[in-house]
View 1: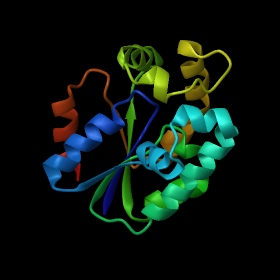
View 2: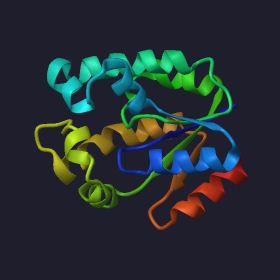
View 3: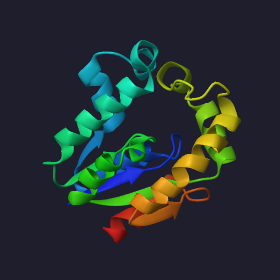
Length: 169
């Protein structure tokens, strides 16, 4: 059984996923890292060359490869829920946890992440907090439907989150 972390970018999926995997003696896979490795390009370059469609196609191919994994913590990209087949495949052998936080918190986290400009392209023409608000409006119902568990991580430390998820598993 896998543990699959979903949620908007900046929610802590990779950070928490690595710590949780270490604590539980599980493997860790970040789907965004797998996409970059497969394409040989950064996410920003993938978006520049083929737009979101190319990125989502690569993401679906990575999800296809994960169907056979077991005992793995998977940090899924923020938009993985946009394709229902991705979620169905992840649900087949995984417990899905939605790490959630308000848009303002996500925006602050993204602003303080030095990797954001190079790795995370704007997904709308507006960018910034407005983009997060608009995309969460679309994605929140999808996250909610996909998740077995929703965890508001706004006021939790990394250690508290990892302990909670380890106990849940």
